[in-house]
Image (tube, rainbow, N blue to C red; front, side):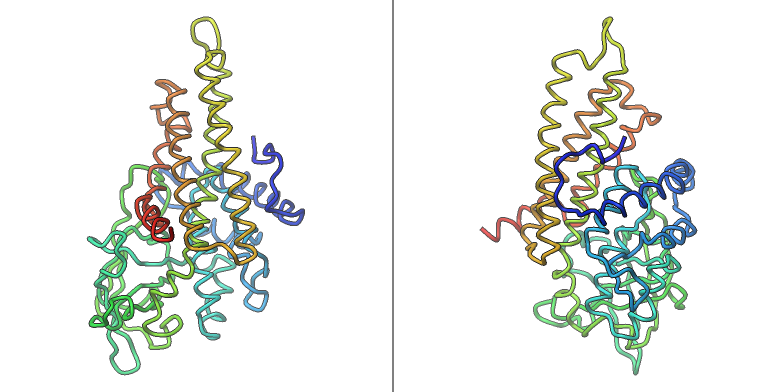
Length: 384
């Protein structure tokens, strides 16, 4: 079972698809067999990151001058699709699709040479710390500060729901460098904080209702001193930087949710054709076929839209509103597919030994992170 069964996709070329085979082979060997252990440990080991780096799966867009392959976002999307379809939980997309973009676009030459090669190899794992207790989607309400003291910043505050938080070696921390700025976004900056800095502390690995192996944590900053040169780009431009990268971040989420929805559908077709009920197969009931037919049609539309969005992004044309719409539509579709597929599993769907139960639990957060569905509607609505 694989994504190769999807006909008519147009976002990728032959080189992309050759890369897909490399990614798929790697995940089959190094990822899928270990997922149950990682879920029991509630963490993906750093060694897996380094192995992925060896085959070019991390940060493929990074230029060759900084140790990367210098490829386009389509290669990132293929990694996202395959990992989501195979259910491998490492937070590669955060590093490759989000943090690498910030570093490439806004990092100093010194920052790029220091960090990008290590991100490509998997020797450094990154996180971006935005959300705080009590702020949710209201990024301008953050209270973490970075106060200047000579040629250093002194960072104080706390962050939560941070992807890659336990494994992180370098965290991009969204701070207020001018807490009195009006409007508030003018006083926000992104500060690089290495994990070995005194005063930096990793808190709990948060106990979620799904995605058990995914590394989501609290982070604390108590008088953490970092050099002024650890500011990413210009001071006070952090909010602008964050907003400029949102189309790709939300497209990444759309890619992953579409692929995981397809996996749930494929598994459910196989399950209903195997499961007996009333002297026949569950698949033989008209209701089963009608539900699956409806989902198949919606998935077909989803893949066509996703390829359209990827193609626009590769040309630099995907807008903030289009990224928000992609995130909204594909995450809502994912939830519909997961819920209906679980229902078709009957009582088995509620048992964790069946993959659909894990996929259903893991899918619930998709309509929350990266901006809730309600925020996506608000953003789209403002553009009307």
